[in-house]
Image 1 (spheres, one colour):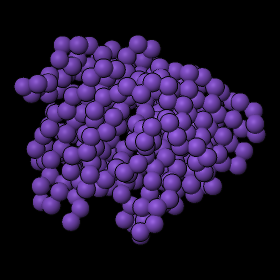
Image 2 (image 1 turned 120 degrees about the vertical axis):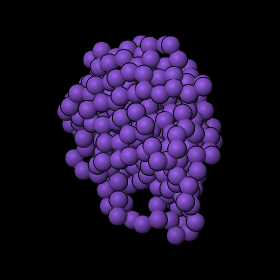
Image 3 (image 1 turned 90 degrees about the vertical axis):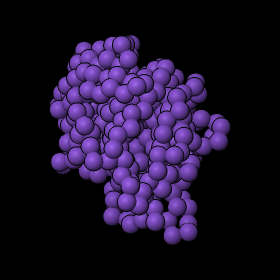
Image 4 (image 1 turned 90 degrees about the horizontal axis):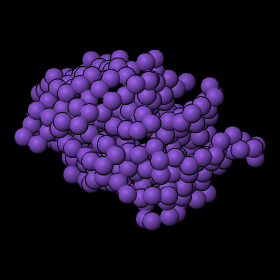
Length: 281
């Protein structure tokens, strides 16, 4: 019998530092464990905890003395390899108009279901990891989550907060009842407008190759080009177990271009993009 996982992804991004915090609970059979992963520009750490330390009330969760909610994150842990303490406060969230999964939210037996809780919010506070401070003052935050039993075998994901907006794109091989298709979910938040690109709205991938993605949907056209592929090894679920290793860059170099009706709404290169690219290069 396949297991289950439920995880959150909190990203905090300033002009000089980026920190992602990933609390999760995972269950295989009768065994439940939980973990918190930390990703920075150059390092990744994982702290594992007994399953009975995980508690959830709505969207608020806690793992031991570590608390996660729409208002922010409180961290306090000490292991032989990792000491973390600090507090991050979130400003008002920017939720989506409706579930990013659309009608696929009601399809049973999917490997993984995605949620986006906030496309962009402010972050203020300080976190100390093994003696190194990560300080955020009026910085940008992003919050999403995943649940299911496994990450897709092949997929690409990217997220970036930038001046005037924020974006998230996920493209993945989706198996259902013996068939496979390329599933797409993406949001571009630009100057107060929400542009949604998704399979259920007619989006299609016209390119997935060598770190390049191009998604077209009606009069919308989003291009992503990963320019620097270095990253950190991160634990990911496979049938509920956190046994898969993927590579994530929390602040990589990516070029984005977004067009509507052939007009370029924005095009820029940034060194503050997060991405996972689990397709062959």
